Amino acid sequence: MPETGPRILIIDDDPDSRALVRLVLRQELPHLILEEIADAVSFAEAFGRADFELVVLDPRLPWADGLAVLHALKGRWPSLPVILLTDRGGEELGVRAAKLGADDFLIKNPGGFVNLPLAVLGTLSRTPSAPKHSGSGASSDFQQLAAMAAHELQEPVRMVERYTRMLAEDYKGRLDGQADELLGFAHEGARRLQDLIDGLLAFSRLDGSGKPFQRVESSDLLGRVLADLGGMIAESGARITHDSLPAIEADPGQIVQLLRNLLGNALKFRGGEPPRVHLSATRLRGEWVFAVQDNGIGMAPEEAKTVFNLFARLRPEVPGSGVGLAVCRKIVERHGGRIWVESQTGQGSTFFFSIPAEIDFTMHHDATELRG
Image (cartoon, rainbow, N blue to C red; front, top):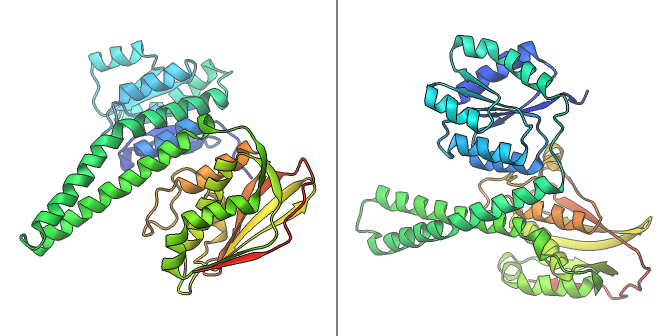
């Protein structure tokens, strides 16, 4: 049976504390949906979804000022109940939290954990109209938060990446093997963080960068994508084929980005054989359903349910930010369509997306092939 109770965020970096909170709340209030937030990335994603109705917050976090998190939550949703749960109390902290709108303040001791279910029940009952805080305003706030965070992080990360690369180049072989390895790890970590920031900026800018829809030929857009991916195609020995493709009403730049992400993933998540990718389109009940089929490593069917979430990375060993497929989902939704995937581990994947077919444009009649 699907969970339908209020969703509670537990924002705490300590796994033992989160486990205790989960234990006491599940025991006394089993109808609650509990979501644990341990780092900035998971908080940003939850803030963007905005589907929670109460927050249990430890104000002492290693990745953020907990009171700033409280201020952000209350600033966006003044009626959202927030309970502070901390291992170090103090009158000053309590006063500051109360001024920022905290609904309750508990200490992490046996009494505090025992009283937590009552505090949750009490704050929820005092705000019976506390809705799930979804909507365009929350989405806009998340985009602003993502853009601001990514922009502020961009230059420091570039400096770290640049200096670790310089150190690795200048001192390679002059230090012991372990030092060379550690410098390599540092440089690779900075590069991956830069990829994440770039992806986050791209995601946050999608709504603001959209252009008016116009009649475009899908095959022309695909040609641009294949030119962009020419290096990857040649390096991997890939063969990309496509059937006749329709003209559609769309934002050309965003459809190019959508196809680039899907085809790029097919090349990146390849198996032992050279990639074979085929793109087709079928007219079904007033929409064009596109399919991108590959012979790559595939994924388990249960993974297909989360692969389009922001920061979802099913294969941490493969370079990437976990943002690309979330961008695809956002582009398709802007065009009034759907996106999904069918896959089995080791048997390749087929990514489908739909675009409304308002006008019956003529399709091209020549299928083409590009070999690497």
